[in-house]
Length: 131
Image 1 (cartoon, rainbow, N blue to C red):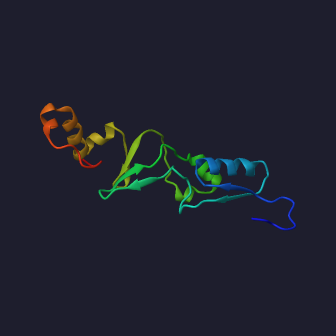
Image 2: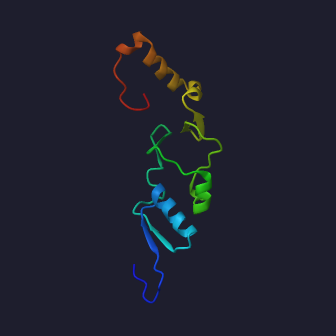
Image 3: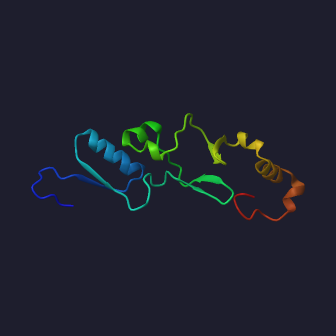
């Protein structure tokens, strides 16, 4: 991008992952013009999740955007607000504490028992994450 006649061309940040967003925010705070380009359909890079056919949500990467950073970047409307931090699993529309909160899930409880009880260990190995 070349802006003819401008003495202050923008700094270009490639990638709207955590690093790119923080870099853009830092540059803007210092008064520089910034243009952020992202090749993907969403911002946040590895700070994203994916859903399986059973409705479970999994984090893609071990990264997250804090509520404060999301507000400062103007992306709060596309982020899920988290009131308290800790490990959790998002399933069927709600966050559940991990691992203790999952005991209320019959499927998780059966899997935990299967892993601990020797008689159940002789069965076939799990075919996917849900099992």
